[in-house]
Length: 261
Length: 333
Image (cartoon, rainbow over all chains, first blue to last red; front, side, top):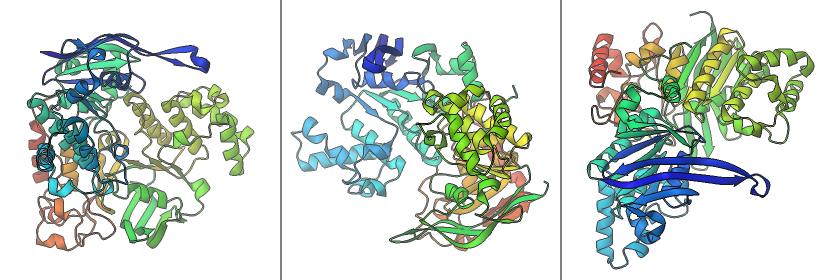
């Protein structure tokens, strides 16, 4: 079932002195995300992949086209209701936390807005359940400061925060790019578990191997345009666009060296 | 391997903090041969950047505790402005935005006592070699893309033919296609003799595997394993290297067909590192002996490892089989 659909979405930024020049960051992009489906949005820097993520999260508004969530245009949905179902986690966990406060503050900050009726005990058991669902030990992370947590723990806490809201769609923008190799894979596996529980994920990345590991379908972007889209296994096994082939040839792999040009 | 170019002997460099010394580099011994490209890999906080920096210059927080580093018989840091060249992390973003690239290079060349006019033909030749036209000298850094800036920085830092080039995460901020071009440029510089030997610091083993002759893996301020690139990737001996390599997602591996696992736990804090093997707490093979610190020993020619288990086993076949078994679960590419 289609949950999120982008229909000819375009984003034009005005740049230069007095905004006289126009820069098309995203041009006529259409794709959809189903219930419990992982879509990898792959592109190099400047391809517009993050802009799309921001538009889906309503942090930026499209200049043209429509974004539908559950069949309704997202601009017509109350922001509060939309946030309950769609949340994002971004690349840099270190800048998502205020180092002055305890790390679990990010969890408690949504309590007033979304769960005003819960008492303390109910709230804490909800928080603990969310932390456990991202395989964090509540006793180990609650009350800690950000510098006492690892990057992987911080990213998981942010995912737990999104899960508190019973979301249906998670926008993961370069979620694991800043994590170390040994913890990166744990967060990826966590996303795979969440997907099995029915969460739809828009997985934005520049790393083809990460996209390939997790996604059902792949959308390859270049300079704001979709160059190739299809089931992940097909796109990677038989890329039809020259740009996709070039990218695939450039990915460094273990056990296999680059062919000399 | 030919003559030894760089020799590092039991080097210890600590960071001074108010709570005591952080032992970022704790007794490191290795050699880099002439014309060798050595990849230096490890997770964040393992001391790889500290090692790279301590071959150039100690900053105010760094304290040299013991050991030495010799480059062609010359003690490091020292004579650093011509013999050793470092491309620090984010070097391309550190270019002066207010002057043209040509002037930036001219200033640096003059500071080393050379004439820019004399070097200009060679500079242009090398820029063209990396696919940049001489026009970039008249551009401001903002007018160049990330990959172009990185290549300009690489030409600049090897213009005086250093003996040793240390490239710290030079490809990590780039897109895959640029990443490949920059990595291949490094090899080309070595092949053409612009630099004698090279240390490529990175967290990305699959990238460094493409270009390096040998790979050195660090863990928590210590050396874990050094071996020829092919051996390290296909038949690693240190449990950390093995786990690290098996946790890397590759194109061709999918969650549905083969689930990868990470390494549980996290590296120890280096303010008060545990005694014995520092990987002990996370290591599935740890046993009593690991309470004692394993020496970094040569188990096969050119293959060094700091692990009691790997030393006592000694049979490479066993590891290879384990590795092959691990791999065979994946989809054939």
